[in-house]
Length: 55
Image (cartoon, rainbow, N blue to C red; front, side, top):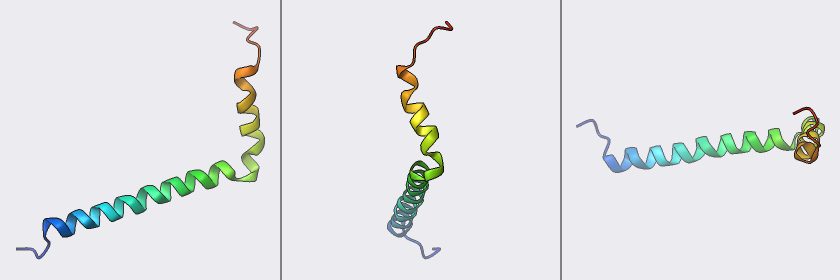
C-alpha cells in the first residue's frame, strides 16, 4: 500500500479544487473591479443600447 487512502486523496482534491477555483474567482473579481477597466466596462454596458445603422 502506498499509505494514501481514497478518502484522504478525495479530501485533498476537494480542498485543492476549492482553493484553485477560489483564486480564479478572486482574480476575475480583481480584474473586473480594477479602476483602469472602468471606462471599457462602461462602454460595453451601453453597447446593446446603440443604434445599428451599419447593418
